[in-house]
Amino acid sequence: GIMPSRVLFSLFLGLTAAWLLVGAGSVLADEATDARAALKAAAALFCATPETAAEMAAGLGGADVLFEERRVVEAAGMARDSWRLGLASGAQLRLQRDLRGDHIARLTLEYHAPFAAATRPLMVALARADCALGEGRLLTYGDRGAPDRLLLLDSDLAETGGDEPLNPPMPPLPPVSADAERGVNPAAVRVALVDSGVNYLLPEIAERLARDAEGMALGEDFWDLDDRPFDVDFSRSPFFPLHHGTTVASVLLREAPAARLVPFRYPRPDMARMADVVAAAAASGAVIVAMPLGSNRIGEWRAFALAAAGQPNLLFVVSAGNDGRDLDVRPVYPAALELDNLLVVTSADDFGRLAPGSNWGRQSVDIMVPGEQIDVTDHRGAAGKASGSSFAVPRVAALAARLRARHPEWRGPELKAAILALAQPSPFERRPRLRHGWIADPTRF
Image: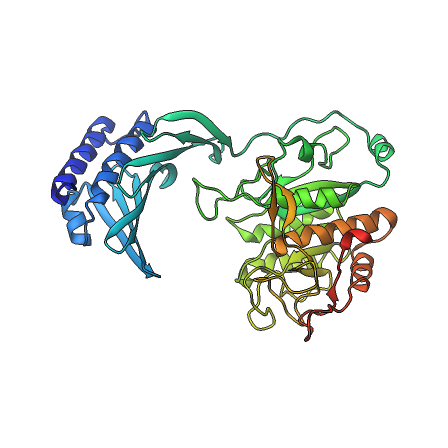
């Protein structure tokens, strides 16, 4: 059965004291060892289901472990009990207990190690309903402080040998002159993609990257501020990152065989850097900028709006989003920005009906194209299907790239006008919900 909570609190306190004695107030030599011990003890402690902050603080020894925060959220028969504890060592434990009724459904336990004047995520452990550890993950960091690799751990939080790269260097490409590049593919069109990055280790992505005369791949990471725009998005979890850009890029490159990709990883830590993204896209020689991303906060997009307005020859193809709402009433940005060089697209089914969950707007959204169950290649190189306005964006950007290959003198205004001229009223939409209609098959043009 479950041990009494105060016995487990004492066990946890003893381990905490041991860590502090070994460290003697300085940085421990092996942070991973500390993290393993902390998470194993915390798993047992948290399974004892402490009910109050006072109980937790008293059991953890007051001065040695400082209670910082607790939050309980209940919905649909489930409760999420989240704790954040600051250790005297400077480390932090973040514990999350998902409850179904009185039963524990899942435990998620994170250890954040001291770093500079704050902390940074180091290790996570996942426990099953019986409170036994199932797996874990360990983050390593590069010289500049950005996450470098994600090591996979077993139920004892030992390394399995499996890992995932998070910030690998771009692969080298053979040197080639600008004239030679034009000779190999005279219709090559550079398209910028602003997303979570791309997995440029995949050959099908690497061979389609735009490059300079020395063979260096173009593109930048405006999240980490380096030249490695690898497909990783930590906005939801540092241990279970999202991957989005590679799937989007796979659609764009398939439907625009002459396109050369310039990937930019979007600046989640500081969206004011979007002005630099726009400048970099213009400097790369791209006229078409695909942006399958957005948020509800207009303040995050002010820098982009000013920069984009200053580049009238660029065409920004942006997604309407997937919240199932009218953007004229409840806007999403950058889709709802009033910019002449913005082309806002959403997803339809194959029959011209607005796809379930896709956003619309009689004034805010320009067109829709089929974007459901689209063939994609994911960040691992595996084939799959994807749906949503994010996958309408690369289809329209690819259409723009094909048009520009045929009309290299065209810039943003001409491309936008030509695409809008292809839109037709949908036969299945009784009341128009878009400004210009839909394009049944963008690959026909």
